[in-house]
Length: 345
Image (cartoon, rainbow, N blue to C red):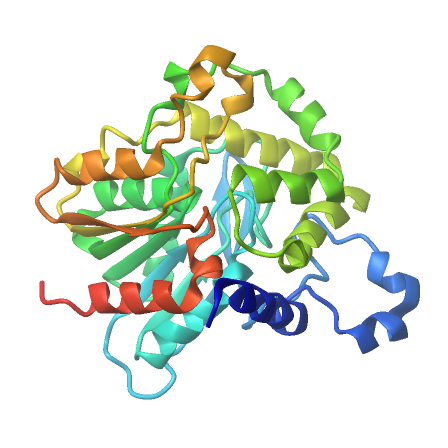
């Protein structure tokens, strides 16, 4: 199937089947209801599987961590996959990966990290160490001892921190278009939280779609991003939107502040980097001095250099693909991941 035909088919699939994208008849029946705000925990935005809540208390705040726990479809293989999402997307975007893994016999646990998606939006700073502890506590609650991890983008950074903190709980790691392959502090100066919130507050549907298409070098048609643009923009009408805004800005500061690049070569598990050949995403590039911006985001080269320092790592490059590898090339991504996860130890 040609690239254009695949893109059109994916756009149609997302428009019809992706959670958060109302069908045409639903929009007509709802009228203006389709434009009602989402809550800052994405109330009103459907996920592909039932969402449960895991209670947590942190810094005196009572929080709820949303997650999907999807059973194998057919004969179980006894393994569990933990999927870790990126910064700009709810965990619902893992739908096709969940389907592929459960069809192969995996139990699949898919959390929204605190500060993201349907989980609570705290007022305090976010830290990868705490997100890793939250994930471990969730696995304890579900009585899961060991997992294979698939982490995309920011979820790749979290996967590294989780595996370094709990090495005995991780079998294999797939880093799907991970960020954090370089220390962004070497290029990007500190940006005050208030400035970040001011800039994020100015985002519109059009500017957000353009940002994703260009910064992520996506091969998807613009309309394929509709559910995610909707999720980003419709929270702005919530009465609690300032709290969401603060949490979202804090997530950028976590990425900037808490580098994991020095930890990646220390991973003891088998690691597969799945990289889009066109992916040059570098958080904070627009804040960097212009002379340094071109040096940032050489992600394929960075992944290859890191893998060369590791005894059990390799890199798979999807040429012509951008940052959303599992949405832009879903069949190839799923095949590569399943083949890797089924390899002998």
